[in-house]
Image 1 (tube, rainbow, N blue to C red):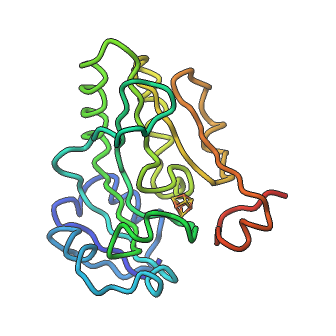
Image 2 (cartoon, protein in one colour; image 1 turned 120 degrees about the horizontal axis):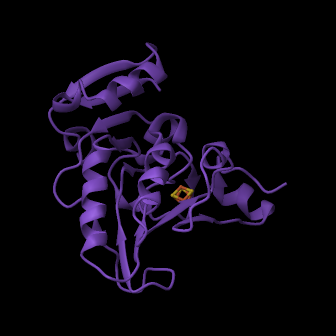
Length: 209
Ligand code: SF4
């Protein structure tokens, strides 16, 4: 990771500091007021950026949990998504993320506690099971060594029984999952593509043997 942008307001956030420690001192760190200054400008070249994306560490504000579009779900009636991260380590040519954002840089929102509060409030507002999709704008597992997303959210969901987490991934880095007890309200969703197709369109995705 050559460059890391950090919103000034969360420069001293404990998760920011842990991230910087994990990455080490090899990156240039640049502060900004808001992640959109770096992420949103028009005219960025997605394909060139994808070769060496920067990491943008930010704080998510506004609506942290959103209703999924009509028809999106896995059988439940109440469906929401939340995005602790924007963009993906992998490079699938069919991925909607490639047309979604101006930038291929990774945005990581480190205020997990606010996500947890929003999820807990949303789950409490319903009597029936509520589904939360974490893999809407990223792969939820692939960047685990940096995000610690599984480490943080599996124990959280274990304490919120009517909240069901769908953790969507193409990663084979399952060690972080195995480190936790199985909970009935977490669905790990993998998608697999035949190797000959994956080689052509799923760059950097682990291949089926
Ligand atoms: S793994 Fe999923 S999120 Fe990542 S590039 Fe491929 S389709 Fe997109």
